[in-house]
Amino acid sequence: MIPDLERLIALQQADADAAEARRHIAAHPGLVKAADARLAAATTALDAAQLALKTSHDERRELEKEAALFQGRLTKYKDQQGAVKTNREFQALGHEIETATTELGGVEEREIAKMVEADGLTAAVKAAETALAAQKKDVDAEKALLGQALQNHEARLQAAAEARAGIIGHISAPTLSLYEQVAKARKGIGVSAAVDGLCTTCHVRLRPHIYQQVRTNNAVIQCDSCQRILFYVAPPAAVEPGQPAATAS
Ligand SMILES: [Zn+2]
Image (tube, rainbow, N blue to C red; front, side, top):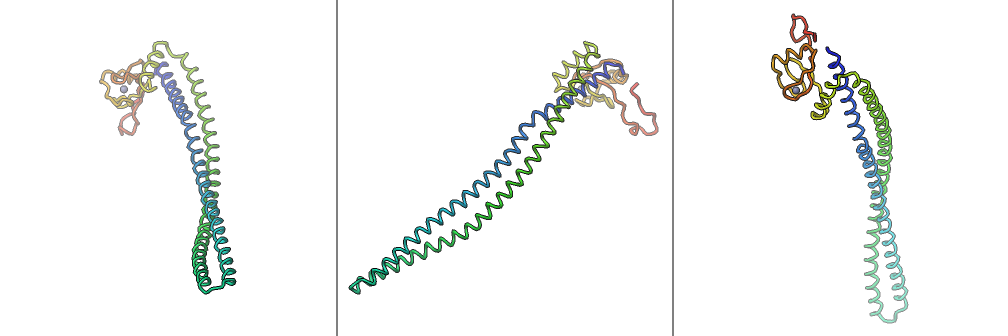
């Protein structure tokens, strides 16, 4: 294989490495944000559970005040009943006492319901606290991994840039320029392996005389279809049992 082709393959590898590292680096902030969003959701859930419990407590306090009011009223009516002069006044107060007792009973029932509700809401707050703590642990661990991965991708990008810098000085100017031009136009891929008569990147069959030339690996030849610079890779020996394995002569 001519040196230019060998170096182009190495350059393509470095460029592909750099592109993948850049993709990961670009995705990093989004992944951190998604982890933060999960934590924020768990915090919001706990806030909501705590608010529901507080509201329930406040409502119970109100009911207690209401009950005290009716109890005060009952005490007053009973005192008055002891002081009235006529049977009619006594009966009227009796009616008031009956009404206040019924109303007090209703309030007390609602108080009991609130106590039962508070038990459920307290359990919900505890569950939300547990979920938040678990989520925090999870998110902390994920962020540590993401930070480590980011460092790795940055190191990989740096290594790829150094590899590229080391290679390009050793490729002939026209070949390098052709590679850069094709790679720019073709999603960063400027070279392509030819296997079994096909360009493995665009999957178009090469014309036989082109493929014959490519098989020698001693010239810079472009795919007719995608324009990428082709190099030959021998198919696995097992494809043709009993035959000598083809070589990239
Ligand atoms: Zn092609």
